[in-house]
Length: 115
Image (cartoon, rainbow, N blue to C red):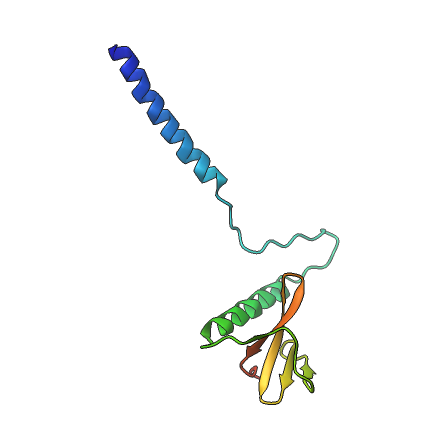
């Protein structure tokens, strides 16, 4: 009887360990941005770094805004701007395009700093 009890305890521990291990293996791995290029193609790592920083600044500016305004269509009379990134000026307001569920939406942003 004692031998069966010991085997049962060991089996429970093994099952617990196995379930913890399988849960850890099932978690997705996050490695950040990975860029793959062919070795014979020119690659500018600094340009990629700068783009990642711009994307991060964009996310941070969205986070800082008190109230995020999102439009599905821009009002009439908006003017497209291309620098320092693509956005639209609509009177006093500025909107940046954002792709969401295969559809363009426009998020109100602060006026970009001109360098």
